[in-house]
Length: 361
Image: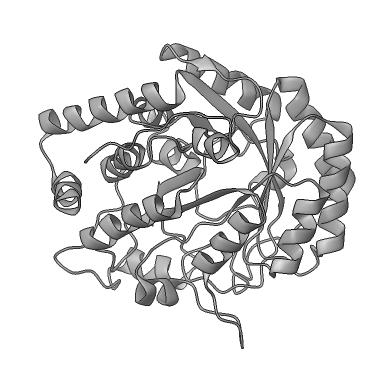
């Protein structure tokens, strides 16, 4: 029953009917996490990556991309900027950079924790459990790793394994939970070959994993990737059940994610804002989201962190980005959240006693 209702919403095209979905998601968000929108300061500290993912512009095979890795001092400076802006969290994100060693990143995390009150979120890809444990011991609070799609064959098509290594992000998510992290994951919307049934299973996975943060965003083709070239020249595989990589489909997934997992933190993503530069973030927030991630990455590096092209805000300073985000949040009658902004799901597991209700879709 729940699955059929999800599929009906995913296929719904009537704008009036969808207004009811938006209303339900916004009400569930208000009840579960309140009016506050939490700002997570994003630091894209390295665009070096050993993977050959067919959809991502950071892939090792993209020879046209200038590579960089920020120093520990530069990262710490960004963390201090997050404190200055009143953020409760800094998110350290990179490609799978082999020179980002467990020891080096542990020192960075420990330095941030010693110098600031910030929660530290890591998003550095697939790493051995020993690395994850070391970073947790150094003070890392959260870890984000999107499984992208629950369809294993589609996942292997877009995310080739490294030689001799099995890629199992669901196993990593379980390891992160055992280590005591707040755990985040998510999925892409509109991957060529992705069906409505795949998205319904993605939502079921979000529930089963009991995630603390869930990011869903549209697939945006990059011309320097194999999959992007196929999309742009019209040769990408797509059947009659192909999910569109559209703004509206992404809002549907944001809304359904809120209804399925009311206590999760859900971002209104930069990819949404790239599709709709005028009001993409605001519409995401009005349809279930409660997180935005203003960019703290120094301007000289931002354009080089090109997972997809034409990303918004790559030329804006951190100060401008902060001011813009704050104004956008206030313009829709929401408040800027303070503190670390743990998810109600996480607080409940820690014994704080926050009640949570799942909505029967």
